[in-house]
Amino acid sequence: MEFQETAIKGVWTITPKVFADARGYFFESFRQDAFEKYIGAIRFVQDNESQSSYGVLRGLHYQLPPFAQSKLVRVIRGTVLDVAVDIRPGSPTFGKYVGVELSADNKRQLFVPRGMAHGFVVLSDTAVFAYKVDNYYAPQAERSIRFDDPTIGIDWQTPANKLILSGKDKAAPALKDIPFFLNAEA
Image: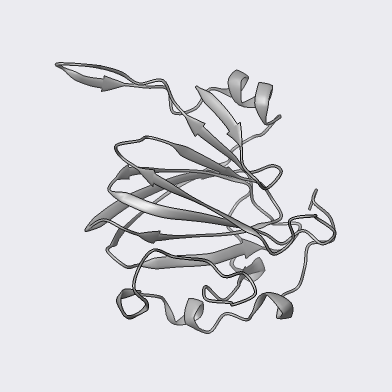
């Protein structure tokens, strides 16, 4: 596995070593020892999976402390643009984002630590998206940031008239209006 930290401290891309032959392929999608070597100790407690069609945009989501979540995300089928936005007060990259293309073909993963808002848009006809989290889903703590907030300026690589969002995501507040994490350890 190759671990590479992105322009936002704590957000990592992970590219597995894929062994392919005429039978198909094999790769390790997670190794605790390798993860701890590069990123640190973590205990994942829940696995999630979603299927979405082209243009579906899910995000930008986060949970308030003490329910904040780190996520390890990957695509099993299709292609998405996956985005993490730094919402840690005092961070030198506060309000900045990284966008990484994740696909069934590249098998790349993205680690999104606590203190980030997270979202993705489907770039292929359909996509199956899977992710591990280190804290349970807590609906009372779930929050969103507006996907098209101009202060963040995310290029979703999809025409605006093709985006499909939930009512909740359409009504999400701007970055300047969200409750912030008290610290990066939240």
